Image (cartoon, rainbow, N blue to C red; front, top):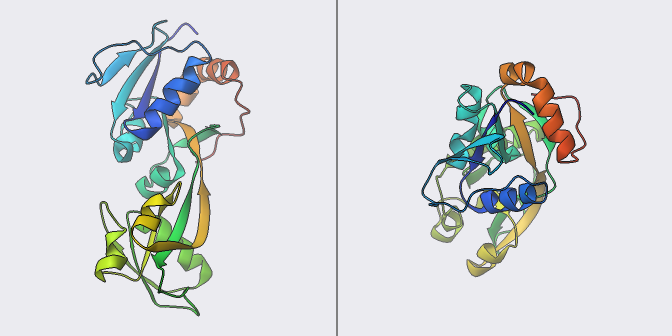
Length: 212
């Protein structure tokens, strides 16, 4: 790969998984000040931008970074026109409907009141089922909504379920499996097709036809 590829990576829990996975293929992150937000791998083949998870699609869609790694939840909420190049073998989680343990599962066609950080996903999911929903958008700690009576149900990502259990909540229904994807700016992909395909081959990733 003669040209250095630019890639936005999410700060937080997913970054360590990216570093560990890339490290197996010789893409090593330098041991530098962890406050740096623009870094190069030790080979000089990649420049990485460390950004807030929810901002990542914005940087890629505007061409600041040509590639990015993020979950389907972030892609869905951003509604940006990015190419999904391939799913990655780490970081997957579940999008679930949850409620207090004394709240029964919803019945009928609604309406349901749901608090969530993922309003677009929630509206789309229940619209397809023909269920009316009132969505209350929150920025964090959605587990508080049923506890304090803001909404009887929440839609949120669930990994271990320990936070739900600690707040006397339970998973009512698993709505979707959320995978982590390598994504690309469409124009960047066309311009750097050869280098990107070499990168995917190096990671031994089974690619599919890029899709929005």
